Image 1 (tube, rainbow, N blue to C red):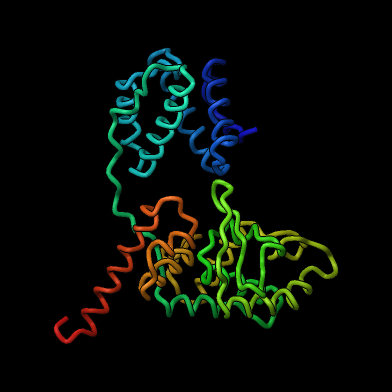
Image 2 (image 1 turned 90 degrees about the horizontal axis):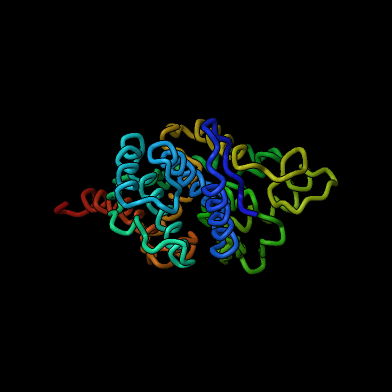
Length: 311
């Protein structure tokens, strides 16, 4: 079954609306293979809209008009960012296109609505020297420090999402081939090269520190905790913040995806092809990858100004 909706303090949805939402979210999971977080976001947006529609117009989701959607979007825009508005519109379009396909509605009321313009939010990234300082922060004299250094090295070497990193199993790693087999968003598998330095750290970690941390216990997780289980995304984020402080990196420069952003930006700075970066990051659409070209372009302009005789 698809993920359940979050609890809501408002009156319950009508049975008709609840059935429609459950069927839609199940189809996102079974037919489209969307990730759990994406399905939860779509369900949350549609549930909030369904509550509004019930309260304002006493109408079910399937009878929503373009005017209803526009009114709700105008209210929603006052308390949300453009990215959230685009996600809401995407949820509407997926929902009504599915109903149109199944013959449950005669038209898509979201079709005439233009998508909000994208904002100029660029990913937070780090300079190469700042990355070096962050990677050097863990104490590799301890087993846990060795684990942390290896995780940071691997994250920067591959551009994995943090959730992909902490979810790695030992059988997904091939040191002989220098590659990882990663299951990304939408259950899409991709092969990611590791690089020699990260391979060396992984080899040392798996032969020594990992065994010390496990203390004869068995685990399929690649990166393990003192309890012998896999590390959580939240725990690793706390580690990144701690090592960021040690490396002298301002907290507002860090995010759970900082090293992923640095990986992409530094590749482009050094001449990598955008399509290659797209494949390595596991982006379904190259437009998602293109935001990094803005960061890389700014860096190139800065280097030109510094080093060119007429800069």
